[in-house]
Image (cartoon, rainbow, N blue to C red):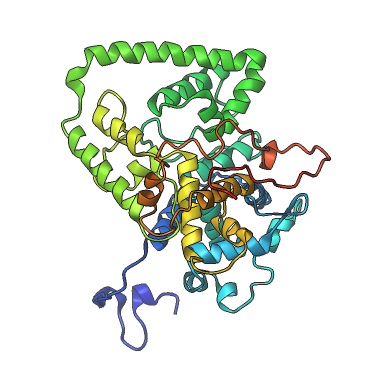
Length: 407
């Protein structure tokens, strides 16, 4: 009965009088992560979303992460296996009815369809988006950057949490100067280089280059320098403005880092943003350098490089098959990361005779792989993936670098 929550059921049961039952069930960290991701995405999804935008974005992201078959086809079987490894079949069955009923053959078939409107269960889209992007704000920023801009289109923005919020791109209201100023302030607040801005705010950076031609990036650099000078002067005058709880929050950040690095399950990257977001006791606004110097210093010290994250993820995949005779590809594909980079990391760890047991950070540190690790082949140029991929017409087979300890 549709009205039973308000009028009661004919059997006499009334919802408003019922007492909530007790449950011993404790949600896993993965379930909590999905819930946070879905809640944020559903609250801030762009209005007027074109139906084929999301599948196209997910397809490109899957290819970027190495789930590739042939030239431009998504290896849906490997992707599904990786999702099962991350979520577990039990959790997938709870969240996806088709998977629970054994209808898995065409579970991700929409990733091979382009240019047409297709219906996909929302729960499956959220699960795949969460797996491929892991961070809701990164996902929304990427979605916004590729969403076609049409006259009158507006976007629902995330609640203001300082300069950490994603940069909206709206051709109808934002001029070049406004966008440059906002992006410059973001770069200063989050200590981002131009390269970091291209990676995290691609849409805004692209618009600056289009609107400002060759001078766009130079204008942005000058704006960053100008605001940096002002911030330095302000810091000299505002030492008394340090937040009274700065030291306490810095300690909480340290506890969060320890928990994230030692958390059981598939490792996720420990970044500046993830440290702040996963700390329960945190400032209302994004910790800036003036009010929260100790908190920011703790985040910068405790975050890990992309290569250190790759090493932890590979260690996790190795541990799942420790003692088994499996092909290298079984392990590298299970990581869900970019194929060539992760293969180099895997070969480096094998050459180091590393023991794939938790805690992974301890094993890595014992082999000289610290949080700021620059990777197994510093300076090596890897072929760009996704949108940056350029076809050369030459097929080159993978050759492992020779690391010390390899036969």
